[in-house]
Image 1 (spheres, rainbow, N blue to C red):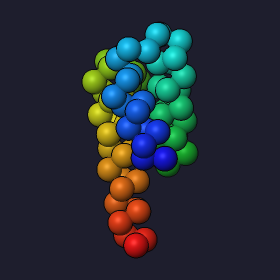
Image 2: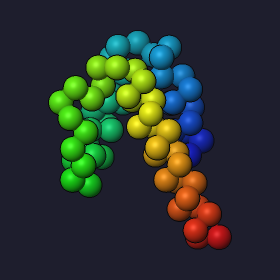
Image 3: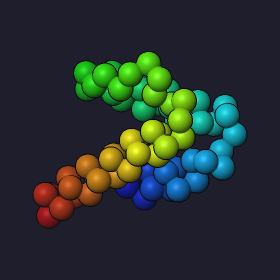
Image 4: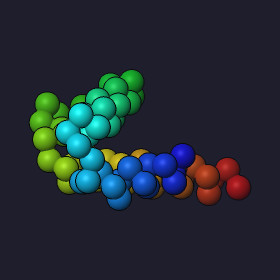
Length: 68
């Protein structure tokens, strides 16, 4: 999972707009499920999406390390 999110993060800027929209909507959906308010402007800047993907990678790694 972390590897997949890492690939998305590193390649995000090269994606076309429809592909970026799918990722943004997926991240918004996750945020809603956890009650996280990421704001209405989330997704307008590539850097915000990449930052969020990097945070998710960090959380996945922490979970993996904690379970070892």
